[in-house]
Length: 403
Ligand code: C2E
Ligand code: MG
Ligand code: MG
Image 1: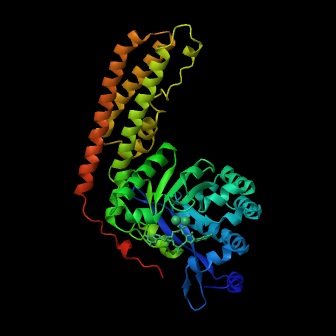
Image 2: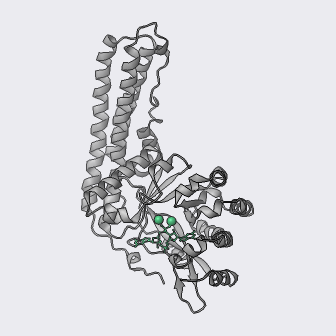
Image 3: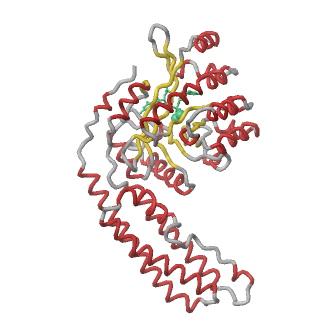
């Protein structure tokens, strides 16, 4: 372990740097960004890992000095990286102490104002979220950075204080699934269930979900199948110095993406929920007497085929990825038709239709919904077949060792 005065001397001597660990998108199969992980490079070239000095720095205000000292360097690095690939987003770790006063927050705002880096290229990773919740100043500072455009990830989700409850208390955009859970998911059914339900939870909350600690191709495929958005781990690469990371992204290497079966499955569940929510609302209102004041309070899920969750995926990431895939194209017209029936039913009930008139039209909606589901399942089947056709990825990067 290092002492506080060693660390201070290290700051003065500029001995700290960031290594970058790639994150791969399970939608595109390409590097989507990286996590910046601090390394202390001693004059003799020895690399000291954060576990040897961050816990010591976190016991005092020294951590704030490290964070503020490193931030301009981080921005400098990201400017170089985004010049090579403008889509990259880089996350960095912050401690509760960094937000106990507004020094770090102001320094972030100041640095960003004086640089050409858009704030949405930066993501803050938080652990120990209970502490973040406790003091309002901490929450306020985080809000300032969120409002400035930085995204926010809950690190190590599923362990310690990174709990479901906290998800509603801070404006998170991303969940990072703890590497312990990821490591056990293939050998424990319970962990596998925790992974798939965490993915669903993130999806329902509109958050992206990154799995940490992916160490094998089998885990990668499991997470692709489960609907996870991004993966990070030694199987892709360890954290590497920026020059190696630049070579890494410059090769434009693709990991397997194919049809993201997990996301198709999410779309299937989204559709089932949409139909159920619409039908339950229509029945609730149509069952009321004509004169009941609540008859006017029809609360429907999005009625436009581009605004329901399935539609947002279809006309967004889906169109980008599969515009020339026949199974994908065949989904558009039944989905459009389904929404037309939905809109018609809403108008009917709005105009005073009773349960008797509604029932036969509900059958039409169900038939149309079955059509949509069958098209989605065709796409899902295609993805599953494709996934098992692919051979083992020959990734030279898997061999890369960080110094
Ligand atoms: P973290 O933020 O959860 O970062 C992930 C850690 O897991 C990193 O360790 C990374 O190298 C390691 N890791 C990534 N993939 C794998 C894998 O497939 N298998 C295994 N076994 N490990 C993997 P690292 O770099 O030693 O960092 C440890 C922790 O130190 C970080 O955990 C973070 O909490 C903290 N840390 C790192 N850099 C900073 C920083 O700049 N500021 C602050 N405050 N904390 C930092
Ligand atoms: Mg982290
Ligand atoms: Mg983590």
